[in-house]
Length: 151
Image (cartoon, rainbow, N blue to C red; front, side, top):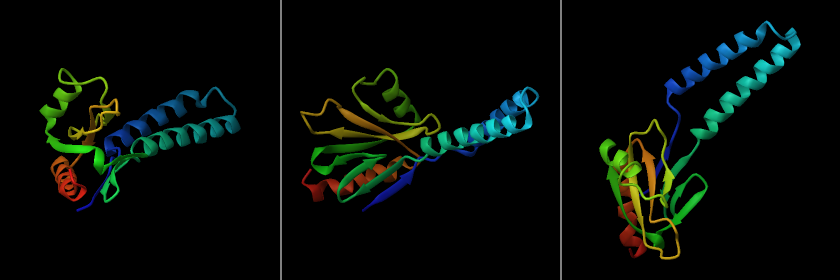
């Protein structure tokens, strides 16, 4: 069983970015000559779009090699288990139940997640906390790979 999810930025973030960009462009429009204004508008738009694309471009992938989140790879031999977290569970693991050493792959717009327990004494991270729109499916995909990996 494999799983792929992109942690895309929701439409609301894009609307806020457009409003911010337009406000910025209007605010500086009267102070610069038209050529500079156009240059600043294009660069500002590219910066905002690039930031949202990169921030929302993180991919969570479960395959035969392991669990990939962004550029990080957690190989199966180091995975002890996975638990799907609802909104309250994720909030607890990010707040009073948190371990400062955890590897966090969460986004403020994702209310659910998966806690991936590690079995690697050399790793300083006790667990990975991964935000997800479908935590049950992600946890099931991870759990399905564990017996095949000998975990």
